[in-house]
Image 1 (cartoon, one colour):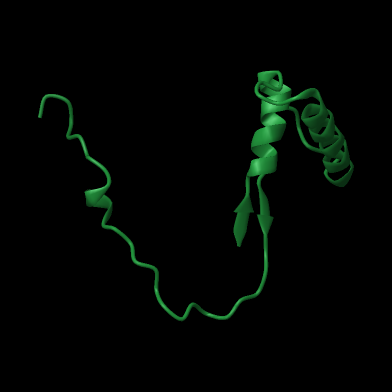
Image 2 (cartoon, rainbow, N blue to C red):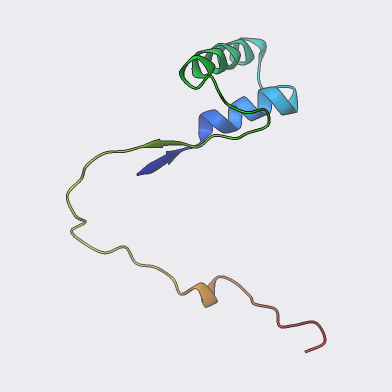
Amino acid sequence: MQPLTALLYLLARVERGGGAGLDPEEIATLQALRTRLAKILPHRPDNAELILVRLSYAPPPSVRSLRRDVRSCLRFAGPKGA
């Protein structure tokens, strides 16, 4: 599963951000894509967000990805006054 978020972020920029940073042609293209998306998903409640994902079959990974320990990335604060 692979999330596809760029389109949704751009649609939100047009709908809620007034298209800041985009030229009129890009805005028009995104508005046309929103119309096409609404035809596929016609019952989207107001203010509901979507997530698009790409699903496919793949062989198991040949090597496990290296991961940093979460404690090396985040600083945990104790209770107030501790």
